[in-house]
Image (tube, rainbow, N blue to C red):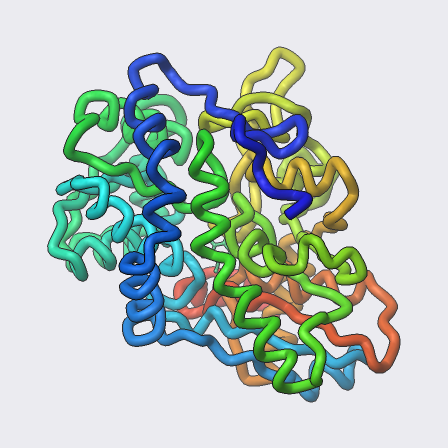
Amino acid sequence: MKYAVNEHGYYGKFGGAYIPEMLYPNVEELRTKYLDIVHDAGFQEEFQQLLRDYVGRPTPLYLAKRLSERYGAEIYLKREDLCHTGAHKINNTIGQILLARRLGKQKIIAETGAGQHGVATATVCALMGMECIVYMGKVDMERQRPNVERMRILGTKVIPALSGSMTLKDATNEAMRHWINHPTDTHYIIGSVVGPHPYPDMVARFQSVISEEIRKQLNEKVGNPYPDYVFACVGGGSNAAGAFYHFLDDEHVNLVGVEAAGLGLDSGESAATTVLGKPGVLHGSKTLLMQTADGQVVEPYSISAGLDYPGIGPIHAHLFDVGRVKFVSATDDEAMHAGIELSRTEGIIPAIETAHAIAALRQFEFQKDDVVVINLSGRGDKDLETYIKWGKY
Ligand SMILES: *Cc1c(COP(=O)(O)O)cnc(C)c1O
């Protein structure tokens, strides 16, 4: 595991736990216990059973014939869009809530931007009968009304963050504050491979079921577990980390992360962190983030709410830094066209996050027998409004 986190919580220059003194006991409890819990046979049995019977795993690996013809390669779609709640995020929230129970926690908090992670968290809290509070920027609550109501239907309390720009970073601050005040009975479920160590490693492990299944399924379908390429979109980077995880040491597998270029890389309205970011500290870890010359976080922009994030997880900052993962980007318009393209060639309307990964295909020249896997991170139902507003179909 050449690219695994080291014992200090770092991936190369990135990672660590940059947290206020008052959060230290919580994070330290998690750090000292998470591996024992995750490796425990009873934990694995319960986790695997829920992934199978509740989430609907393994998700299919589907040979997309018409898309393959169009791009001159053998293109497989890893159907995370078929997971319960419509995306990969539930893999992680199931893992974390089982872990929280084993830590003896009775309450769950989370923060959410677009609301997708909030819904995945509210879902598993309902499943386990645990009390749940989700912090969400007031502005985001207005923009993402259906997800707010989904959380409420599931029995979660959604608290508006009223400070700053009233968006994700403010919700994160509120969640941190809550955790500081309730250190013993509460677990904080983070939704991507971000945050202080051990979160990025823990979330990557829970999502690694994606690449574990891809290997097995490819082996069955083509007699070889190794694709030539794996594509995944990158917001914080959890679906990408999961899709790449079991291929990281197989250097002949080309790994491609696709970021959101928004209105264009030079437009000032973008979320392409590897192009525009510099090293700094975000959400408790050292990583690449978009910031001004004096270190203020720059508001990112993407048409896709799930990619609208000013940083990437430290594992991706490292994989970019050492060149193991190639990062490319797609603009709003390119992604939207790709979303329509997938809808019309395969009958699958993807989440707009995912559409960015599809849009990147045209930036590559494949050999006819190349096996290409695209991680289809989510379904487009939640994005219908955005498709309609965009309108070019
Ligand atoms: C949240 C989300 C993403 C982005 O998050 P990652 O942590 O980068 O995976 C991508 N796709 C979908 C469908 C999402 O809901």
